[in-house]
Length: 153
Image 1 (tube, rainbow, N blue to C red):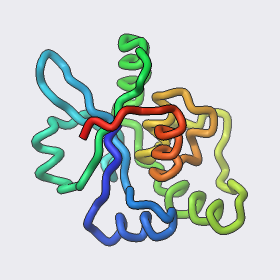
Image 2 (image 1 turned 45 degrees about the horizontal axis):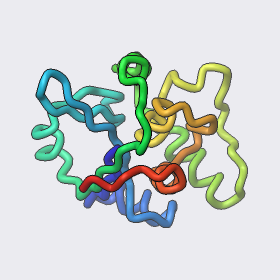
Image 3 (image 1 turned 60 degrees about the horizontal axis):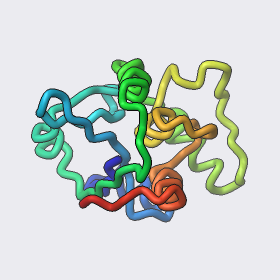
């Protein structure tokens, strides 16, 4: 998992509201020796070559890896099943701020939560976190610490 800090205005607003140093979350994967990032950006969930992603988004980031074995085939199938999923602007702009201020999740999430996902929702869903649909980058980072994810970089 890459925990990212962006330099643009939206990143600063996300960090301010979530009281976090992180504004974005992504997954690093290797496919046949090539490095990729899979994340949710305004164009939805996409698989991006790592070097292109670094150049385009210019995030500062830290990398954490699960301290336990993950069934890579199942994880990959779950992760790639969301390719092309639209970005969840409504939950990010409305749901997250309201939950931060009131402690209640108020967006109209329904049975199929995965029709739209923002970055940390997507990563949390890939890991099977029950309340993935309301995870901020800070929430996901705290979950990583609680689950003893190893700091790689």
